[in-house]
Image (cartoon, one colour):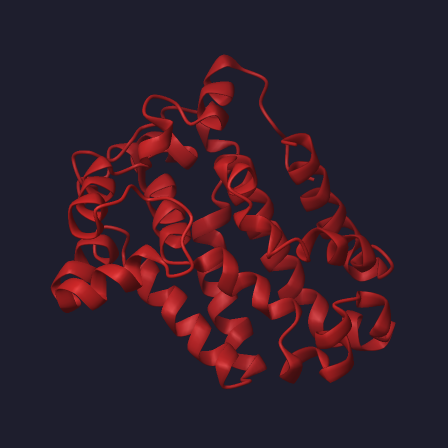
Length: 246
C-alpha cells in the first residue's frame, strides 16, 4: 500500500488545489468549451475524440502533444483491446502505468523529482502545480482522463477475449479459475488497479461524476475480485479509495 501524506500540501493536492475544476491546463478546458459549447463534464464521447472530430488532428494535438502523447496511448490501448491482443495490451499498460502512478514520495522532497516535474520547460505555462499531482504527472493524468482512459482501462477486466464469454456476461470474478487469474491476468490487472487507485486519489471527481463506476458495475466486480488472492491487495486498495470519497 502506497503511503499517504497528511501534510497540508498533500491535502491541497487531493482537493485539487487552486482551480480544481479546471484541470492542470486551463487552456484545455477553455478549448473544449469554445469548440463544444460546454464545459468538460461527463460525456459518452471522450473530449479528445470530440476535438479531433471537430478540428482534425491539429486540434487533437492541442491536448495530446503537451501530455507527451498520452491521448494517443489511450487510443492505441483501445485498439489493442478491440483486437483481443492480450500481450500488446499488457505492454501498453506497463508503458503508461508509471506515468499515471508517479512517485508518491516526490511531493515530500521539493528539491528532487517533484521540483523537476513542476519546472519542466516543456509544460504549458498554464499547467497547475497542484491538480492531480501537479506538473508533468498531473498534466498526463488529466489528459488520460479527458481521453476516456478510465473507461478503456476498465475494459481489461471484462473483455470477452481476455476473460471468456461467461465472465464477460456476469462480470463476476468468481467465475474465473484462480489459475487463470494468478498466472495470466493478475500482473496486468494489478497494474491497472494501481493506476485507477492513484487516479481516484488524485482526481476525486472521478467518483463524484461516477466515471469510475462503469454504469454501477465496476465496484461490485471489485468485491468479487477479492476472492482471488493474487489480486486481493490491489482490489482492496481501490475499493478503499473509492469508498473513502463517498
